[in-house]
Image (cartoon, rainbow, N blue to C red; front, side, top):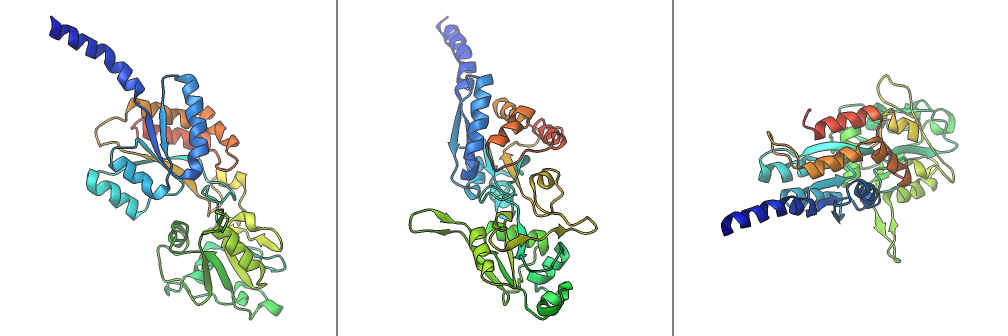
Length: 324
């Protein structure tokens, strides 16, 4: 009889224990604000829900999943080979990835779009991704572009060499750019490129790579800056970019959300779901909320990350449900 009573008590306590278990989120510190907004709004619907955040960086987020100490990894960039191997080797299956937001137009650290900027007096009207590859990539797959004249500029510009101020290509942003523009080539034209990474000022604040590249280009009439759209001040302007047969596009909220601007970025959530199993109901319900109209609407308060379209959000919910 005592054994039966003990089992009954355990069964009654089990749902409470499951409810008390927090949803543990690791990831990019720039995503903490929106993650907390999602959690707060979700708790209004599910008062028993609890959350724990360890936002120490995108690079460490996957390790939280493999170590069993995180339920979700929020990352402001796409996964790469380091992330994939770090998860799949110990787990023996791949992490599941969904998109949870579009990146910002120009807020540093919030998956900001990458832009090409030139001096305001520069007559260049547009640039293709293929031309940009020929400017920065010296792997030999294309004929290198070294002067402004090779881009069709005449007069004083024709013979002037293109000097590039860009993100550090050893950084995650730089590596993404190499993969997107140079198709994975790592043989950049170092003789014409000056790289900039984030730097910490004496007061502890961060001097972002985009700001440093923009500042350098402002002092050089013939420079081409690879930075973010926010650098289009004090004599710099953004050049519309063209990808293949598509028209040249400027970065904006509309062109990023519509997936028209070719160098926009996104934010993701990763989770561990072994093939043939379902995702923990608590985690799945929360992700469905993140991808709901209400959840995506909260991105407006972030003043950085941008919402997904309804169609893309619905597609991501199908991944959560295991339908894709």
